[in-house]
Length: 225
Image 1 (cartoon, rainbow, N blue to C red):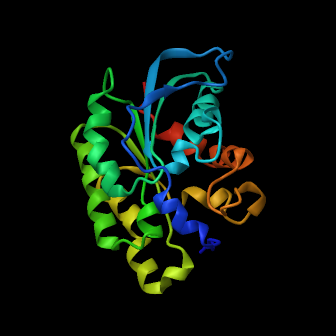
Image 2 (cartoon, helix red, strand yellow):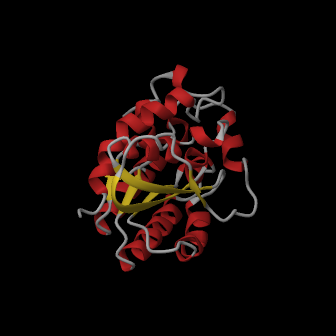
Image 3 (cartoon, one colour):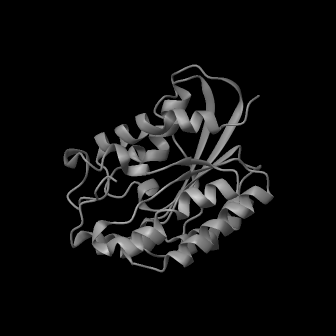
């Protein structure tokens, strides 16, 4: 298992940016000059600070850079960045229907990146499991293709917590027929130069690494035709 560097800043992450969730807005694409084809592909990125782009400019956030990479492949992607710093799985579940119902049409794909703040607050893994299953069940009910960004527990929480927490994401994805990225931060966790001073959030270069590591799976999760 890849190890997570744990410092006092981890607990700051759990509390950062809390407040009323803004209505998500479509993210701009840096690859607008690249010719695209086909109908619009609408992707909603539901997540926490790892999607919101904590410590970065808005155009450097993962969903924005991911949209640019997909458009660079000729896909007519519109990305809605619904990342809110500090959100837990409970917060994500609470605003899921609002986020989906606020779209002009049903998304073609929803990316889910939640659970990191549950872990940092040492919330019971059973709560994370229940919330993740509820989120994915609602997306499955609406027949929205979904990709889950998995998380792993920090070592300082102990093996018992890791044993309960780590299987939450693969089990929920399997149960609700979602695509899984086993550990979203895998591309940066062993590279401190790709993480900010809090040892958690990716730098601009770190976001590039995350996009490069996941763009194939995201593209593969898009509905055909």
